[in-house]
Structure formats: C-alpha cells, structure tokens
Length: 402
Ligand SMILES: [Zn+2]
Ligand SMILES: [Zn+2]
Image (cartoon, rainbow, N blue to C red; front, side, top):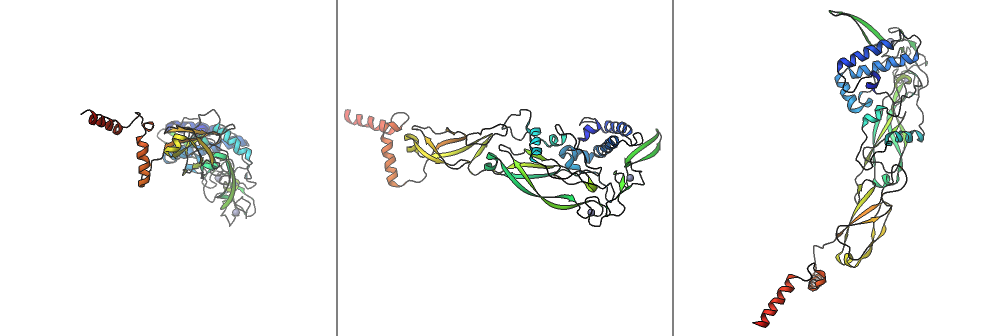
C-alpha cells in the first residue's frame, strides 16, 4: 500500500500551501541523491517526497486526493520515459492477505450494524498496512476500485466470487520492462537521480527549484530500444480473473483490499491494490437490521385468535413458525439463528417476524353472514359487546315498559 502523501511530507491534512512547500523543501534537501550517494533508502524517500509534493501542491490534484486517495490522482508517470527492467512484483495473493486486510478494517471493536463506517481515507491511510517492499524501482501501479453487488443470502453466509477485471498487466513481449532487449540506461538528463534542479534568480535571492526529470519522468533510467508492443510502457490493458472470499456479515460500503492485485506499474513498478467495495442488493422479502432480518407476515384473524403453524421463508429456506393462540397484531416472533452470520466471531443473527392481521378487501355474501354472526358474540368485542347489541337491548326494554 502506498504511503499517505500528507504523512510523507509530515504535514497535517489542513496544511497550507506554504507549509507544504516548506516541508517539501526540507525533505527534498535531506534525501537528495547528491547528499546521499548510493543510498537506496534515501532515493526511495526522495521519490516519495516528490510524488507527494506534485499532488499536494496542485489544488485540483490535492482535492481529488483528499476525496479518493491515491486512486484519485494516479501516478506521475511521464509517457515514453524509461526505467530499469527486471521482475515486477506481481503475483498471486493468498487469502491470508485478504484476512489481514480485514483485520485492519474491522479491528478496534467497532459497533456492529452502524451503516458503513469505513471511509476510503482509511484504506489509503496505511494505518495497519505499511509500505510494501518494491520489487524494483519502476513507477508504482495505481489502485483499482471495483464494486461487488451481493444478495442478502450471499452476505448472510459468506461467499466466494470469481471476478473478471480489466486492468493494466505487464506486457508479455518485453516481460514488463518496456525494452525489447530488456535493458535500460541511466538517464543522461538527470544522471539517474530522477530529478532536475533549476536555479532561478528573484528579487529575494536565488532559488533552486527541484522537479521530476522531464526525460525519465523521475525514474532515473530510460529505455533505448522501446518495446513496440507497449510503446516502452511495459504495461498493457488486460483482463484477469480474481477470486474474492467475502466473509459473512459484511455491509454496504465495506471493502476488501487485495494487496498487489491492482494495476501493474510501468516498467516493472510494483502493482497497486485492488479494492473491492461491497454493495448490498435490496431483498424482496427481508429487511436487514444489523445481523437480524425482519420479515412481515400477514395472518388471518381466526389463526391469530386460535393459533396455528405457518411456513415462513427465511434466508435458509422455509421454516415452520408457531403462532401462539391470542397473538396480537404487531407482535414480533423470533426465529433464532436464521439471520446473518456475524462478521467477527461465530454465530448468526435471528429472523424477526412481525405478525400482522390480514384484512380482506372483498367478501362474498356468505362470508359477510359469517362476520355478522361473529359480531353478535361479545367475546369478539374489546368492550364486551357491540353498541348495536346494547342499543337494541334498550330499545327492547323501552318496548316492554312503554
Ligand atoms: Zn512491451
Ligand atoms: Zn532523468
């Protein structure tokens, strides 16, 4: 995972342009290759600092970075530039990688069922990740973000998905080096440092401006015999299949980070990450409430009064539910263990069945007669007898006594 640009420069996210400039100057001087000959670490730092400054010093790029992280700004690759060939740090991620990413994401005792608490900043902030070792010094590949739609059934039990992804892959012709022969040369413009200094005189004195080398784009090396298949980039658009194991209990907006499964970097640059953002499809029957699911069940009046057993759909198929006698409307009945699996730890939520009374809209005449009979019974009235019955009683009494 790439380092946060603000962290690289050691400034706060609200730092002013001046503060960013000052921090950059200080670090650029500190890690400058002239001061640190043959120091790979310093060179690496120097490149990071330059990359961070290029983004944070530009209002538009900085805004996009704040919003989308590294994915919003891409990399500072200059086209047609060369770099060292060699192995690229691609390869297969095992699932332990995914789970360690999940631990990063879901660690720290977050409250369950609270919407989508993870922002992209956290993905890119590198709280638990740390920088990946680079296989070579090419330009790092960008992160790739895809959305993965899941049904509630898939979320409830967890699912393994095979995804087809279009992304930048190493060019087969040149083995990702960008060079026909697989060789590169030290850039003559910057002598391998990857940056150029320009002195400018102003009324305040002389300033030395340090910028990425225009010839090699900061890589320090150039390709002389460019690969004709990828025009010296070392990468091509390709399609790959990726297996993603989604654990039970994820929510809309959660994401998985698959390290090293993003775009391959030009000329042997380390690949970025693949970020899979979970989307929950709405369900026809169920509403989700944390790890419980709610189901609305309409029950006939006689069944509510006398009790019955009803087949109720759940995420695992139909289950017989007992409606006890004298069940009141709006009662919540619980079918334990038929909800959604807990993301952390074992066990599952429940299915909650909200019982409501079914009121028919159209009645035949015989049905109406049945209801009229019911109406006569005091047991079916909340006041122990209908007004009509009371009235007729008084009417009868009047008839008798007058
Ligand atoms: Zn090529
Ligand atoms: Zn150069």
